[in-house]
Length: 84
Image (cartoon, rainbow, N blue to C red):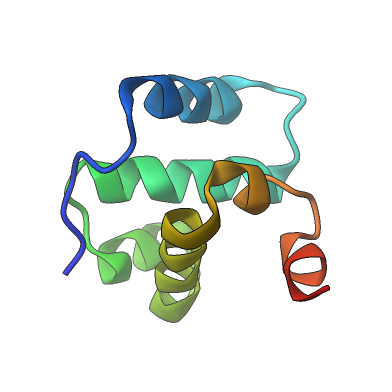
């Protein structure tokens, strides 16, 4: 189970700015949105349903966040960058 209140205040602010920016890449904004929703106590399944994703995708984003931080998750094409 993922517990809320895991991002710091500064991290939360950065995520909120990312979601609100019109110029932000859709995938990056979607990952930021998912992290914010997890922080609000939503489950991976609930987020996946709203964002039309698989819940394992959301879970994977959370694991990447915890292991490597937002900097890794915010890379466009983050999976390719993470694997190298």
